[in-house]
Length: 116
Length: 114
Image (tube, rainbow over all chains, first blue to last red; front, side):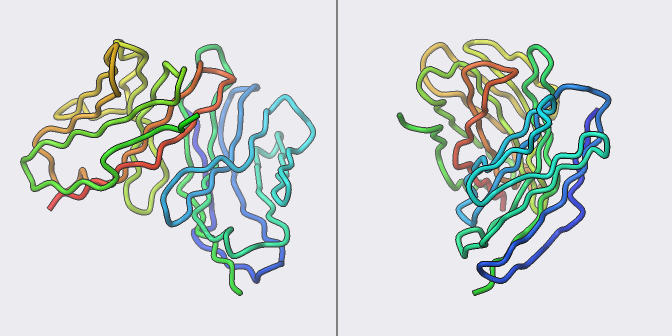
């Protein structure tokens, strides 16, 4: 079974600064997907960024980028130029890429506060 | 294109009552997933359904919980004889297919058992 670990329960960052959220995972599979979801106070789950394990290039979405280290099973999220609207819970998630795979496995989350 | 819709957004039930949570997937999506988020936890998979079929209910408690996705209408997650430990946020997601396809989440239903 896969596990996802987020070792930082809470973090804070000054507005306009950069912050990195950590995530490690455990799997015996070679091909899979990794995700970062944002959950603001509204509780809506919003997909921030997605990485396919077979791609060596790190995914980037505007101010959000990842550092994917497959051998280390590490998948950190970097938020640049932090904005007040980035305040939220952030969840790292894993999904196998095998045929018919669907189940997402989530970490416990990191609560990020952006300070004005 | 409307997103995944869930209702109600908030539901309060007394111990022993039944809770019914509804999920309407995105248009064209026939794959529905239910996840539960306990306080201070990440989401945990409960059940995966396609139209009229339960494909995988391995994450769902064996007692009191059931799910359906009828040919017409929304998917329903039903919890009978609720207990305090059922208090959680319940999220529904839908997708066009499985591997390789994105799951889009609804806003969740927050169940409080008093």
